[in-house]
Image 1: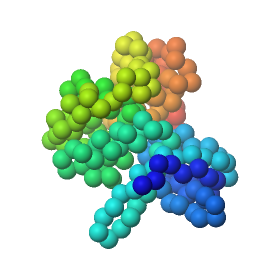
Image 2: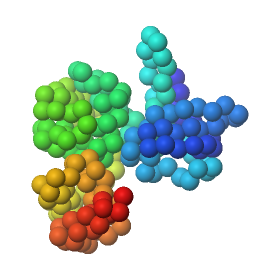
Image 3: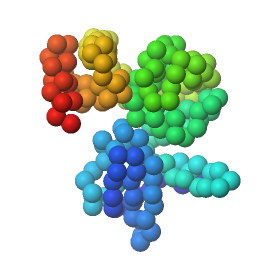
Image 4: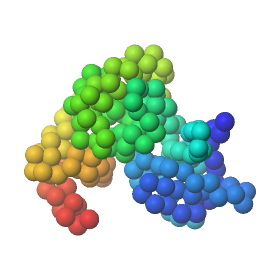
Length: 200
């Protein structure tokens, strides 16, 4: 029904954004990924949208990228996955990482996301693997992470999880660090992540 909304970003919360379009303010539920990529409050913004319809409510979901909306809609096709859980998956991992986990049949990569246990992760992969392989156009996703970079990221995340930190939290921190400084070693990433986590 609505492809996207372009307007002024009126207010932002970690899980919500309000965009004013032609004098009308629209409330969107958003993922942590979209939240990190939003411009400053008061700036122009474009959000791709999905309208979720229930008998008792209408709710808009907003996404900074079309690839994120596409994956959100695919996740809703998995048995037992509603919009809240789909948004949690998109908050815990990047679009590319969710695709990698599903295509590689690696449910363990989805563990640790709020609400996603072993059975749910297995069900997501079972229900969506063929759909993702068939429906995702070549080149529509962001460029895949190199094998070396992917291993470095995963090693740093696993090391921090072993220290007792939540996987979704350390994932966000590690990805942010590697976006800023890609040439770090695993040890340097872990140290930088510990500093960042303790500051927050």
